[in-house]
Length: 300
Image 1 (cartoon, rainbow, N blue to C red):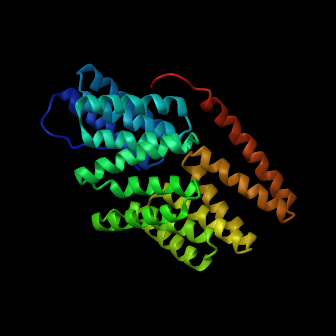
Image 2 (cartoon, rainbow, N blue to C red):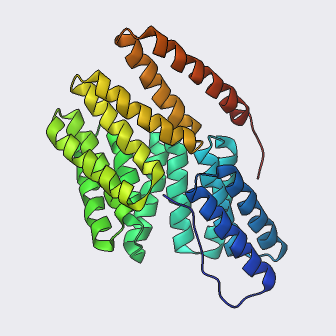
Image 3 (tube, rainbow, N blue to C red):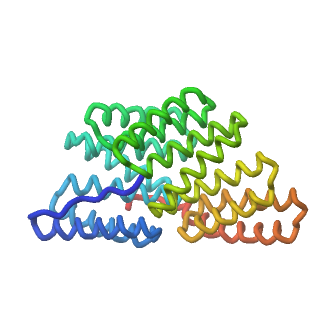
């Protein structure tokens, strides 16, 4: 689930410059510099709008929406992604429509509306199957995650396995790791801790190999949950501290807060009131950063 890049070919200078700005934004996202990414994507959008480059604008709206999701600016994310969908539909560009469906699926998932999320993701899967898009593994993983959240484990397991096969067939390592982690979650739910650890560690190995920090966070967090289930709270603390460091250094406040909650809970259970207070203070400071973002409104 990354941002959308594009190739530079012979074209008007403004369009070429817009592509350059968009690529800078993609690079900034990969580096975890989300505020820089927003600046570059907005520059690209401005240029594309000035020459009525509808496809370029759709790509920009997609990328802005995804970064707004990463930084918990949900109102802006929803508006940007709907603009991407409208523009892609007007162009009848099936790839852009699939991308917008998948991103809106993620948006509704984060908003807690699993039914709406599943509808959008099923639309993305349908398009990818018909068009033969290599992104199908990504869409299937997202859909399986929705089913898992709804406790539809057998359906989720089947879809994760379908996603794993598709991702391996296309050689998409990031989606392969996602499938492995999802299957690990199902094994954890069933109490098969040995299998869960094997799947989580395989996912972590792949994500470290490709240097995907966002997914490394999820792998470490999952291993932390597994350690709690195994009764090893000290190991869980070590893993959650590593996960927190990854999220904090990438500026992903939602993930950082989620991990701090786990750490505070564990320190309290272990009777370590000093660390419980220390991390509660960190949580409060982080909330002070998050609250202004939650209040943001309007278009990019």
